[in-house]
Amino acid sequence: MTHQMTFRGGTVAAEPGQSVAAALVAAGILDWRTTRKGGRPRGLFCGIGVCFDCLITVDGVPDQRACLVTAADGMRLGDDAETGAAPEDLGDGRNGGAARA
Ligand code: FES
View (cartoon, protein in one colour):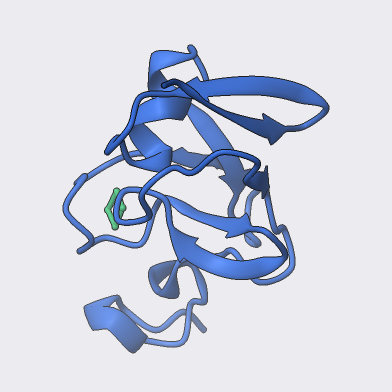
């Protein structure tokens, strides 16, 4: 049975066992958040839970890695501009990135 999730006012279908990220990409949605600095689009990158590019709010819980969350019927998906920035976008040297002045 195909699952139905909501995203930005629309419906996204997912097959059982499919990740949220896979379902979004299959629906043609390639980015679902933007970075705090620069507003750059982010979506699926590594696909294995390492890069944190795919952060998304799932059922009101922010900063979930879409590539690791298994899609379920009735899930509410949304971007989270305030808390969805990846650590390397914080510009403070965390996550191995260079600190910005
Ligand atoms: S795509 Fe890299 S953590 Fe999800």
